[in-house]
Length: 373
Image (tube, rainbow, N blue to C red; front, top):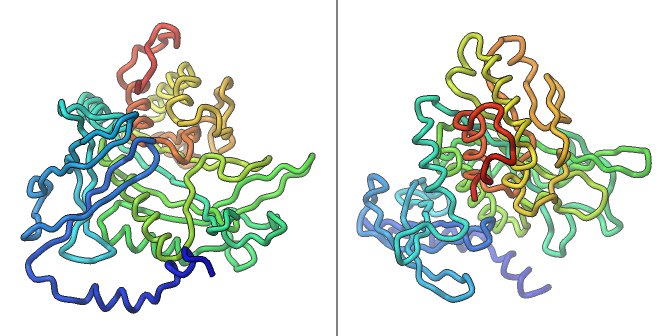
């Protein structure tokens, strides 16, 4: 057994004993932030002498940032959650990262998104995001897969040990998010299409999805990032890796996405379908620009053609989808199916509201500067 395997298999009852020790009036606060890659999360913990009642009770803190040079940056708390790992009164705190001039640094796009959300607050923009992920064993194979490779089974929302692997992780993540106060609203087993010649099969044994929402404005990005953090922490306890890569497995296998549901008060009101269709028309004119924002690795996500925009009602193999019940009701929301699983939600949200609510209708791609730069 490797040293890493031994570390993961340490008896969990030992941990429970130490967690049960009385800690007096002190509170542990874990600061969480997006690192230099724009995709990974980091954290560190400090002690406060009493439980914070709100975000203003949590002080800023410093850490190091590697961006060519090793520099000091400031962690600024922006959203507080309960800690499902060490329990009350301890907290998890999502932070922005500022440089020495108090300017958001590198991949931290939250402040720019917040400014745009403030501009469109009268529209009451609501979001829901569907985060797909794939579980891997420490040997690099998808969790539960045999050494010979893909077992060619599985289906969307499948049930059964021969069809899905890792349900315990999915359940524990869901419960941990609810405890923390993350607005998680659902989960299911996922599948991807596997093309073998002219035949299409589905694999999904180690692929899952959770949904976060409904959230208004900047809250959506905060809750999704915290849900991602909690997922990685839960996976630590199970000795597996959760991948948010858009193309987690090489070969002719479908990608992982973060489908984004979006609406405004006009879209949700009677007769709102006309506003949904207008938003889709605007999105069609900025399709390639949106894909560059949605996919951090430019083209790794092949869920939608980079060049060809498509839309339909009650049909999901398109760029933007109108659910069937929305069409029947004449109001509701649209689903943008283009964002990759490893997208930055702040950039996705910002791009949607800039195109659908702020940009001049009909303006050509070449006449506008790149979004979320």
